[in-house]
Length: 241
Image (cartoon, rainbow, N blue to C red; front, side, top):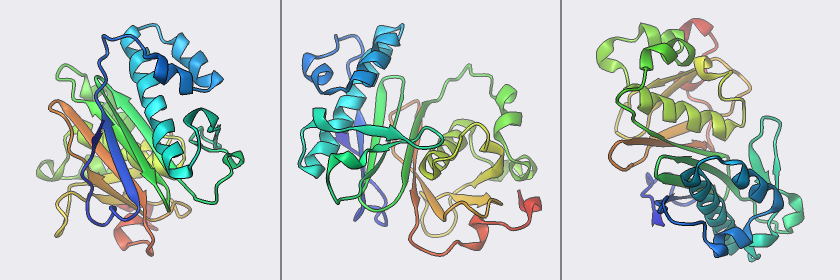
């Protein structure tokens, strides 16, 4: 497990970890023992061994990280899902400490983000050279992104992980809101922070940053900001999108 370097603005409140499990190895007894019943049932539904190993390793690590911060046993933690399926700790975990978390995994890697204050989202994806990007762009890109000049556009997978991370942090349905969120290349002094545009007044102010990722992968983290919405993040005029 490797701790991921985060932008300075996130470090007081957020941690991120990358897992690189051996997908050819068997699921370890130690990891299996800390999972809940529903997690074990889901793990057994995976048809491919590598998918099961990655899922079990990620969930077991998440439990250990959360338990260490709560002073609990990993196997005693209970989770529940929000309206759009975003998991969170059940109140029965018995701690006044508020922990937000998010998990993503792809290929041979997993990412876990934990926040002590506000909502957080994370995503990692493989950059697949043969992937038919054109077939998905109409479902993913906002009108604003389609109008953006080519030199200002992001590579597809980089844009995808930012959108996933932001929408997962907000806790809304990802597929149904991809076109409502526009992502721009980093602007200003912070070369890792993306520009965001949307026209959804109920969404909180969000920031999104590029994460270092293994070769052939893209990764991003999003965090709910403790500041007023900036003009570029909450456009009242849908035409801005």
